[in-house]
Length: 109
Image (cartoon, rainbow, N blue to C red):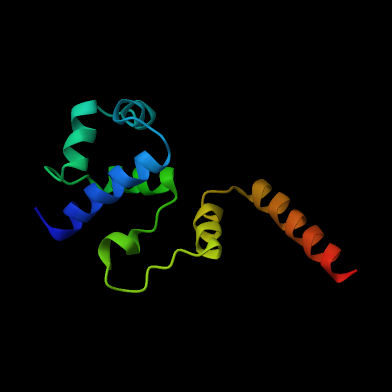
């Protein structure tokens, strides 16, 4: 077990609880088995790259928190938005752009 897998298990468990999800609900949402979720949270195994990516995207987590825990991991709103933007298609980005433009123009008047 590596320090990263141990951290990942703790972060996964805490994040799941913060979202008021049971282990069974998380397993269903990610289409994985309940024992696998339990093993991840207990750091008995490490996720594959694909599963790691699915989990951090699902919860909008920063991989830096897992891999670089000693660095300043302040997870600002700006960083959360940047991560979410990577999941948007062009049409969604245009809607977001128009929304931000409208919000900023209200403050200018």
